[in-house]
Amino acid sequence: MNCSVAPHFTPRLGYSTTNPLEYAHSQSYSPRVRQPLSDILELGFLCGLALCLTSCRGASASQNQSTPTVPVSVAKAYQSDIPIQVRVPAAITPFITVNVKSEVSGVLRRTLVHEGETVRIGDRLFEIEPAPFEAALREAKAQLERDTAQKRQAEATLERDIAAAENADKQAKRYDLLASDGVVSKEQQEQFRTAARVADQSTAVDRAALDVATGATRIDQAAIDRAQVDLDHCTIRSSLDGVAGYLAVQQGNFVRADADTGLITLNEVSPVFVSFGVPDRYLQQVRLGIETSPLSLAVFVPGERQPIAQGLVREVDNTVDISTGAIRLRAVVPNHDHRLWPGQFVDAVLKLATDHKTVLIPKAAVELGEHGSYVFTVRKDFTVDQRAVRTGAETGDRVEILEGIEPGEEVVTDGQLRLRPGTKVRPEPDLPASQGGGD
Image (cartoon, rainbow, N blue to C red; front, side):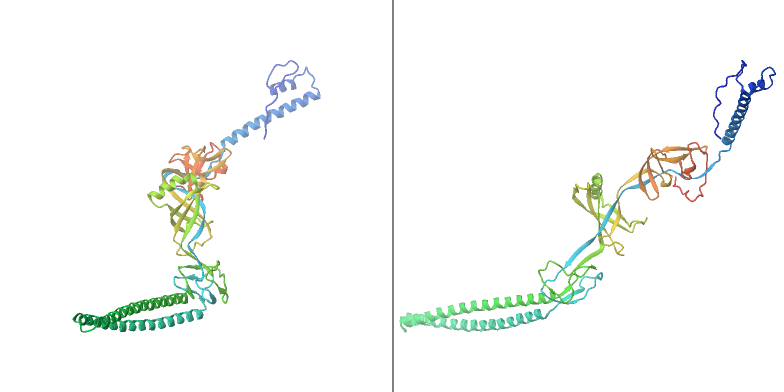
């Protein structure tokens, strides 16, 4: 009921009083003054006004005496060591990516891998038609056999000429002795000397021919090795443990060794890289952390509260991206169960350091008002006080309080809608939202 203060009352007919009831009584029982209709109406209005004022005072007093106690859930603020973390979006990239290409030109005879299939090192992926390379290998082997025969012939010729040269040298020496004794003429001596020199030159020629034949056999062996390599390349095998992507060339097509497009892409997905960027204001903390020990990283799938993988930061970019103001980092994360997939977007939580003796309260206790965040604290007399706070990092269902709350103070975590400063409360820890922190 809305009650307004009665206007200032001015008594009539020279009667001096400030009490409207007293005035009305005096006017009602005065036999000397005649009461016109307007005076009677005014008297009724004044009586009703007095009754209204009396009723409002009674209702207000009754309301103050019957203010109910509000049941609330409470929790104590407490100190704890919490990690200083940065939560940023991240992308999964393969640990190794291989674009499989053919090293020989030919017709793709068989495709032995399926899209999306898991492959191991050495698994056969494709087969190129081997017939031309088998023929090239046989030709190289035949060439080696021919040149080997020529080498043996050169060796035999050399041995024959060496024997002839030795005999010619002996003859020349004997005729030298005979010429000195005057048994043979000078001309005969010169003939045998010339024959010995010719024999020596023939052996030199034979040795050169043998070297040529030996070189030819070596060339033939290299050709055989090359033909064997080309034949082996007709079977294309996996060079890593990973997952196959889409086929770029179908069976029966002609492929070239120098083609820009590969046959298929293989991604190694165990482990994987988690690529992300953090604001450059954390650069010094990142560098300090990596110099002392690898920074740990937790990977979250959006919508899930528990991390699905843990890893370590291994690489930091050498420059800050001027377009975003972020420094790029890359962490290595084991992925044995293949829950992370290349191209997937996740949330990365990077632990930079540990903050000691931090005041924590449940996040449910923090309300947002016109002037910022606030909480309701419970006094010793079980009345509440509205306290402005400055919040910091969040960890799980707790939030760091940088200013406004001291350890051990009780804060309201449920039932804030019915509270005002000074409201009396009744803590009930058994309410559903009453889970508080430790001391």
